[in-house]
Length: 196
Image (cartoon, rainbow, N blue to C red; front, top):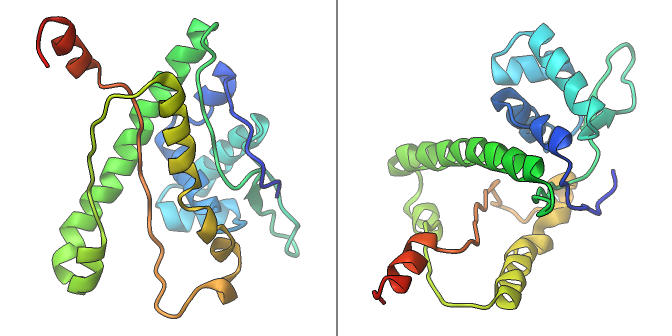
């Protein structure tokens, strides 16, 4: 698997992941190669549906055939991460990113909801170690780009733990980091209208 992640701006390729099951399949493949049958067992979808959507993800370069396991045909991610950005010169790319981002936000929000629903049954130290965090600032475009890159680098030190369980410290659990760095358009509007 190639660890380098080049930004994806192609509208067709972006639309290929703008589907709830395809997002789920990418997430399942984050855990390692899997067959359509294994994906169906994890997702609750039919093998035929998983097979179709896996082929579509492969067609658009998100996944590829992994090494066969006897008669089984597993799939694997092409890269460990995804960097999807709009091409500012292509309105279709902007629309594709907006559609995909809306679906991705729903997907991630559901994970947060599940965590909050289960939190009362979790050890208190895990609940207190977790966070929902918001911060606001005024920044230049260069500073926003720097902040975005810093957020993306935050989890780099944990990367090798995903593929190699021997690198995971005793007691480690899988965690999600969900972050968005964006312009606060509502505050900008209020400020331009004479607010703060």
